[in-house]
Length: 79
Image 1: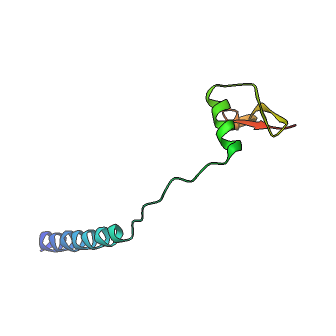
Image 2: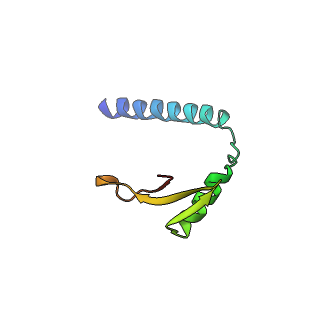
């Protein structure tokens, strides 16, 4: 008897999975890439080239690293 019950439970769970996967496909929307502003374009270029600083709108942005357990982060600040 327990084998029959377990087979029924498996079939029910398979039906549920099929229903939810069909529902999920209908709600998927395509998103377009967000346009980056000029500052981010220049900053990302500087990061890729690992430049120590870059100039934007008359300000110099210098490279900084995170501290502690976030030391792998690289960011630029105008200070």
